[in-house]
Length: 391
View 1: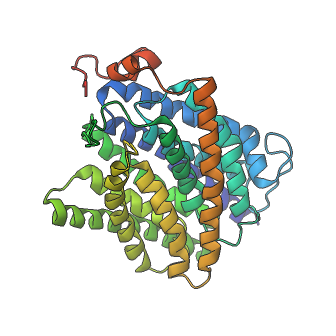
View 2: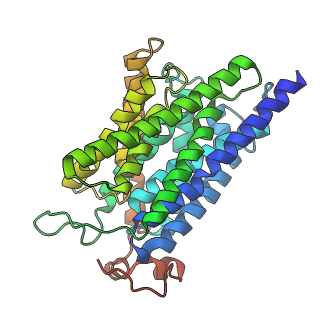
View 3: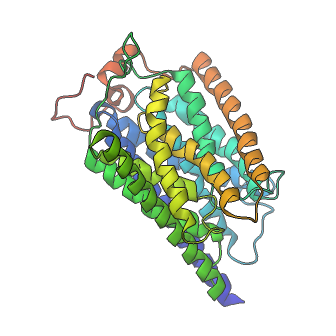
């Protein structure tokens, strides 16, 4: 009895560390995709998001999600592995939901008001959705292994609502509606960030099996991780083929987003499909990203990092793909989960951002946005020896 307990506890701790590795992944990806005048603000936001959301979740969000009493894990027990390891693993997830938003809102959101929303997300919105699906709630009939809906769609619905409240960055669209490119500050950072996220996904999905202490469990974890990687590869290849066929160029940022789209898409069902299904799921995920990013731009939904296309579009696709590629789950159960979560997260986020905008103020003034947020928000610049972009 002691051996499985120790092994499964260690497995959860190790998986949680891999998930936390996604925090620098998000930070590097977003810092590379924004302009140099906003890099420090993006990095500071990611650090604060990890710290604040983790604190709130351990303080009371975990209890709300898993049926405890009050604060600090009170009333929750585990027998198969340490409750502390399980809480640490679940804590590692929570900041990712708001990190999805961080990139999509970058370059025109103030840090302190955004952190106010992060508290609500980590303390109420995310735990409620997680409890509905992962803790025997009224959506427990759907299958969502590691959060195509609970993590990615929640973050995606929230960032869509927030972007619609905030509006686009200055100069992103001209008076005729034409799209003005805003070049990334560092493609190497984008690449590093995306690859860190890819590595972290093995803990994200594999760890969501919770146990590895028998040969059967070890096989399941191995299948999940293999399928996760396969979907990411398929997403990258599909995006590459489409880009080359359509534009005769290979944009590494879009290829990486294609890989991330494939990874999001397989997150719901990596444990219930075979070896060929992740190729199809991931490839469709990669194609959806490269099609959705320009589509949202045409609607003037300004998403600097493609967060909506990667996380919301593929969160929905991945959740529905479970029913399409596994006979064990019904399409209605999966679709119901998608619709209910969207109907909850989107309007709640809309109202909260509208209230914050009205009573606190969430967007910097025009001058600060033009000059870059780093000086106003953080007091330092990321690249002081270089000329800042005035785009």
